[in-house]
Image 1 (tube, rainbow, N blue to C red):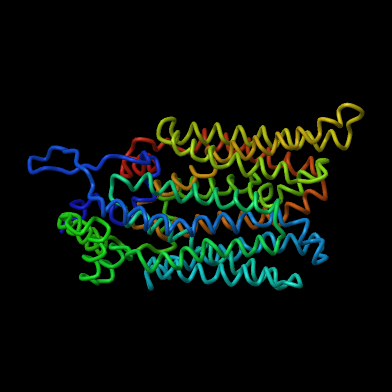
Image 2: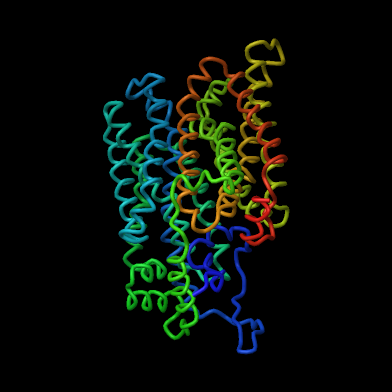
Length: 488
């Protein structure tokens, strides 16, 4: 059996993460015996079960966003109630990323061993345990244990949710449904920001239980990934799951054969080893993947996002609530706009526009703190306005490109047999950068608020140069074409 007989193997295992650029809703297509495309309607059972399964899975994405967004509105109240030092709260805010790093590393093995649904269940249990530990906390150590536990849970979610969606969705809906993962992460974070302005930090922790509860209940009513079942050799369960997703009366014989063929073809690909990644032919792919993740994080997103409320207070507001609400509201529509523009403008233009905007946002915020330290008279009145404007310009610019595009490019630049290993390392680099930025942000702000934002502005400016010099345009190219152009 020749491997190139199954060039569509990406559709079976990996390609769902590469198809974010497709429109959200497309009409289904089928091919008649003559090979011509014929427009048909999907079986209603197919569409509804796929949609329900996706909505259950993205409860995990919403939980991801809730965990990440929790620390910003809760910072002042937690420090006051539990008498935490700046170092103790910085550890609480950042330890989630350490848990997420471990979760991301182990997620592939867990999802392969007990299935996609099993991995989501484990993730939900860790998140529930973490939220309860936070809710009942009386000291810093229990806060940290809870935050670490939620971090481990979302580290698994960050891997298994998009994989599950990619593996259950039909080709014509896969790209659109995959965009719901990133959109629901943003929605979860925004909801945490908004609720944090009206409820106590303990109550806010309890609201984090709700997405997990919906997920755990919903998992009883949806099928396991057919591709995982086929990979495990569970043929009867595989056929039943595929029929539930495509409709009881749907003809799934062709799709079933393609999935089985793609699973079989994997056996002919060489097993990836860590040292293989540093082979000369993968060098540029590694530089692109690692570089984009480093610049994404060291542009300051997790520092600014985790501690947005206190940043507004430091700029001169009596309360950070108004700025936090604006921060929360602006993320969702801009993220949706970025998903729409990704395949129209291309990856490189979006990255350059986004990083230029984050540079401007950091520069404005840094300038506001400079005026606060050195300004006089009427100049001081502009400090809060400049600070809020800078942060909002920053988050809008980040949401339209730097938030999602690095992940899309990462999924496009590695060959299929290296994606799992390479993806794990790239995710590890991303979470490591997230920890470094979120942990040092408060210390940097204590050193110099102006200097902090100017450092981030410098990384944003370097991002533009990196994209111009190193990152290729991948819009409209097959994976083979992308990898050939990189290697050349």
